[in-house]
Length: 108
Image (cartoon, rainbow, N blue to C red; front, side):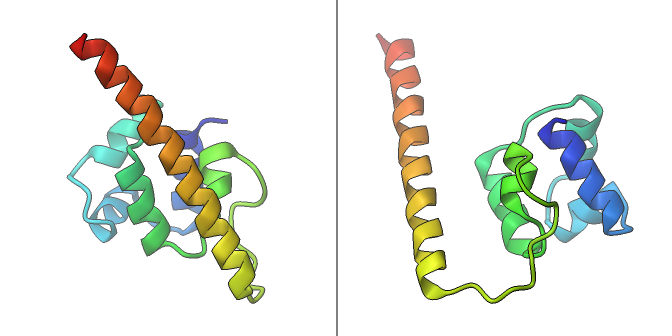
């Protein structure tokens, strides 16, 4: 299952429409509809907005398909939050390095 199909599944689970989901997240009209229709990918900025606006959504499930769609309502400890933030920082550092290499190749 792709990210776009998981996103559609989440939207359906929330009993809302794609249009309402776009409006709630302040996305341009048709952005999510196009991503779902074309089985497209999302930018990290869009994923970040979704994660911030939908704390019940398990972002690991959305991105990787791992775990359950919805986050457990268990209390998260500070050390778990810190570890998650460290993991996210490492992920984004690697992403920046990869993008920088691609830019370097294009400018050489």
